[in-house]
Length: 329
Ligand SMILES: [Zn+2]
Image 1 (cartoon, protein in one colour):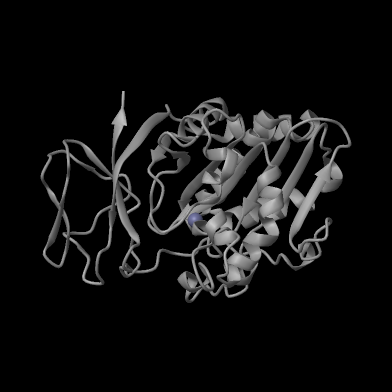
Image 2 (cartoon, protein in one colour):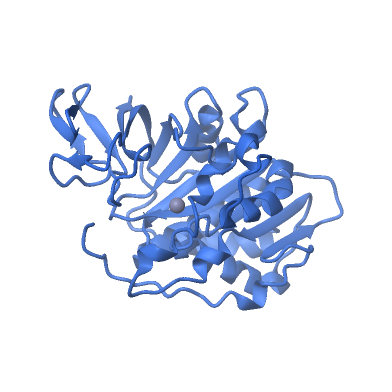
């Protein structure tokens, strides 16, 4: 495991939101009483990704200052049981309790006989996810890396996520991937993965988990998303969006589409990267050795192979260790 990056963010005390306002702990749902989209934002899918908790905590604290003009807005904290373990001295421990909360969203898992802390929470949140027309899932990354939007899987909703992200104007990197063999993510659930259905979900990776800038990215993306969705009134959003635009130097980057061509999955606990790699590192030459796993060798499949979120956690059989992709013109 790489050394711990510095912890610049402070995990907020969320206990005042525990009761929720719709019968589900840590879920706050605001119905305008008028027709319109069902919009959902989730933080803390992973309990150690605190930038999302910071911005939803702030938005809920402001609730006397805003209104939902149409439709319904739902703000949810995901894996609270994991977040409760947050310890700045051992921050990886609070990622999840029993299993990755972002791999349990297939019906086979949710409706199956298996039990875990994450499945119990997902089963309670499922009606909100299934009702959402537009969904934003707030995440961050273990290693320092430019912010990127996980737009969805290729042929399974990824293009809808790209179109939505282009309307938001951020972030600079729009990722279309192949999903994870170990389980379905929330943004791939049901209608979100149907290219013919307008319902769209995206996942923002705001930067390194605990860097100050990650909370700024989360805030910027959240407000742009809520404005795009028409989920909050202009009087609240406009001055905050203007202040954000003025504070951004340099301005929002040109958006580039990064398409994942394959996922590299650990076949044994002996999986090793050939050398340390950074997130979004580009390997200029095809054939460069990326990793070994027993007698297996993984090489860059083409020139300008981009390494997407190389894992720093100890390899587990079946876990995605890195995804390989290329930028599209
Ligand atoms: Zn995450």
